[in-house]
Image (cartoon, rainbow, N blue to C red; front, side):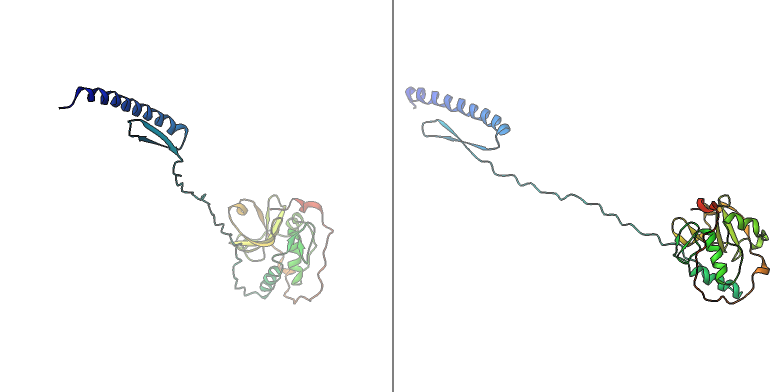
Length: 235
């Protein structure tokens, strides 16, 4: 049987231990928010509690590399000129002459050899095969040459006019034409919606002017005595 005296001694100590544990739990709760250190409680032999702190173990944080977005830009190739089977020797010579200038730069009032405006390219291409007519702006070609029959509008060699007669090119077929453009220089362009919506009409160099003669190789010179009507040349 336990003595009353021993109970009287243990009971107060038990109360002290309970009160101390309650106090320690309150301190731990508050410290966990303010201080990332670990709090360790130890009960000694006399029933007292000793609080000690030590640095908390570091928390491993996984680093995420920033995501990089890569985009692939696919260059759209320039429209390829069709391969024509021209039975007419003069047409074949004209096509060769035009294609020899593809890639030349655009420059107002120039007829080559390395820079052309639109009417300058037309004039130079026909000159290269020995067909002579007066160098002039696009509007003058429109006034000079006759309108072709409907079935000749998209025939090779026909002149096609755009945007209030400010631009002229040479028809290849119903699919496209050659011209000297402000942006891109001498090139082949398809008859897409943009160009078809801007066509003013067609003209054809008279048949009597087209004599199948062999052009004489000679240095090309630039002609610059043309009116300023080409300044609004498209595109």
